[in-house]
Image (cartoon, rainbow, N blue to C red; front, side):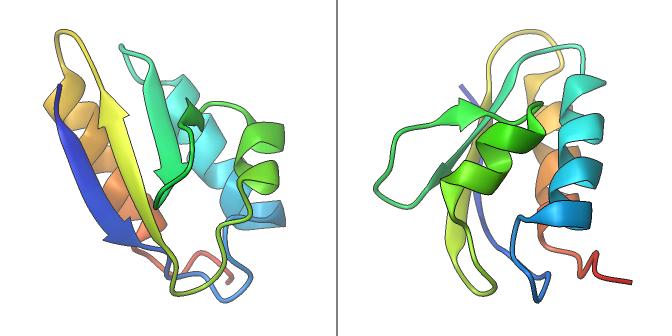
Length: 88
């Protein structure tokens, strides 16, 4: 199962607009993508509510994972978004 650790780059963390953008991208992937705050339980990345309740703030490390055909590409796409400042 591919996974990637990435640091949250948005100043507001995975909240509001950044959470909506990440959830939309995750839901569009051909496989189910999960995200976990370091040491926490993974949640479905395709849900804005899940992302917001994760409590991932600016500078926190999260683990993005997926399983199945196309999983590496899905993980890479979501990791790139999380590692980008989406506040603008």
